[in-house]
Image (cartoon, rainbow, N blue to C red; front, side, top):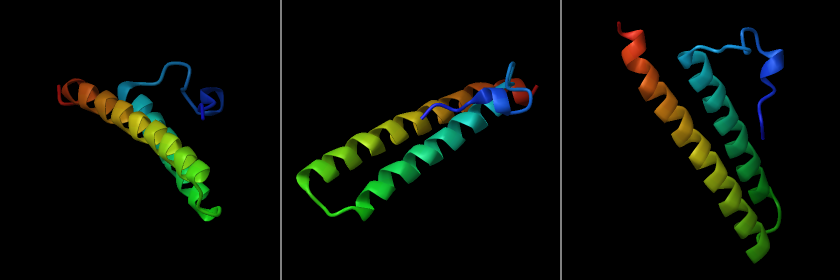
Length: 77
């Protein structure tokens, strides 16, 4: 899922904290989508879809965390 940043104030040029917050929100949405797949009957296919969706969410979370860690030195100045 891609965040439509055009509907978020100041999204044209988000600061580092705003950018990491957007990424964390996107990761949360991806986690919700992944875990929603578990509401379906369990099968090899549904577990594969869950694993792939959770992997995307995990990757987005790591991206958000890295963005936040990179922003911290600029914030603490």
